[in-house]
Amino acid sequence: MTPDLIVFLALGLVAVGAAVGMLLSRNAVYSALFLILNFATMAVFYLVLGAPFIAMVQVTVYAGAIMVLFLFVIMLLGAEHLERHTSVDWQKPVAVLLGLGLLGMVGYLLVSGQVTLGTITTPEQGYGSPLEIGRALFTEYLLPFEITSVLLLAAMVGAIVITRRDAPNRKKR
Amino acid sequence: MNETLLLLLEWTIKGALLAFALATGFAYTTLLERKLLARLQIRIGPNRTGPFGLLQPAADGLKLFFKEELTPANVYKAAFLMAPIMTMVPAVVIMAVVPWGPPIDFFGRAVSLGISGDLNVGVLFLLSVASVSVYGIVLAGWSSNNKYAMLGGLRSTAQMISYELALGLAFVGSIMLAGSMSLMDIIRHQQATNWYIFYQPLGAFVFYIAMLAEVNRAPFDMPEAEQELTAGYHTEYSGMKFALFFMGEYIKMIAVSAIFATLFLGGFDGPFVEQWPLLGPLYLILKVVALLALMIWIRASFPRLRYDRLMAFGWKVLLPLALLNIFLTAVVMVVFNVR
Image 1 (cartoon, rainbow over the protein chains, first blue to last red):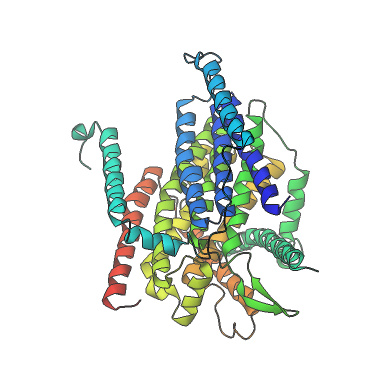
Image 2 (tube, rainbow over the protein chains, first blue to last red; image 1 turned 90 degrees about the vertical axis):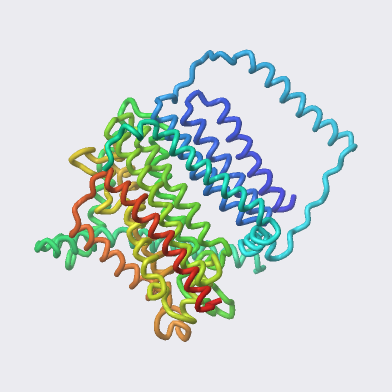
């Protein structure tokens, strides 16, 4: 066993364990915490694969910003205790069936040898560094990048407008 | 011995050194704070334990060990236990990318001072760890099952998220000047030119205020507004669990001071640091102590802000100022053709 494989197996165990914990936990706050652990493990995966920039962004955006908002909503609404029976109970057996089906299909393809996994080569030095990503974003992908930023700005303005329904009635400060 | 083992040994020693330095730094920061506050208020401060009260932190620590550890009946146990740890860990981890000095020659082996100062996403690492450090506080507030703790936790989380934006934007000026996200490159560039506090006074100002809010220090110590919230998120904590919160808070103070020193005061830079690399850590410590003293001075001078004023200040003053700083830096760099 190579060190890479040991690291991969350990990380995979944590990631899958966290995902299962998230699904099985009866308390929404603990579910959110398991999801954070899962995101953090994904970040370590990116680090191992030689993509530190993506890893840091993963932690900042997903594990940091988005999950804090999730936790806020769960705590402020007092929605942490899930009902034992919900209106989507019928989905559970279907989900288990579909999941097992997918697992069986992928497993069969791998075991029967119809599909082989490609080998991963180590990326060259400097690949995926902030400098390279910045250069790519501002030259090759400039238009999509700018469109995304305008979209984000519009979403931000929209969020503010929606939450300020009572603005016209309010006294000017 | 082969190279891997040597590397492992090197990192273990450096990690242990850093942990030891931070723990000692925490203990003596509490003493510095008590002594300095006392002097600013024309008192004497602790002076009974050891010469000049130098053993006071040890006595405090011993006292906390003997305190009864209470876990209230209706708390969420797992989260209640995890919260102090999740506050403490990011405070220590964030120091991993701060370089302590130039590389030294250790028995014919080039050893870099610092855990990973040359990381090319160093500044992003700081931001990502800072964004995760909120969880300890929000969990402590929620798991205590107490309205004061909950309100304190939510308040400080909202505050930290808001000021994180200004903090992150204040980094950008330094990154633009150095043209790199590696903290080592930023320091090297400051050595070659000047300390960035001369080029980035506005950025440094915004950063300092935002970092006070980020570590919940006066005048932004909203979670501990004792008249309103008893003790905020750590109301229900006692004994060593409380001590961990306390420790996390002070280590965070040290860490953000070290980051400020690195970004704006040249980090380990100082006279003769290239000839004697071991002067580097000393200069860094001196700068950190000066910044800590400034924090304590501010605490003694300013009253606490009202909560809505604090949020308005963060969003309506500090954030636009940080954006203006980026804009000005970019314009000046283009006009004077700096890069």
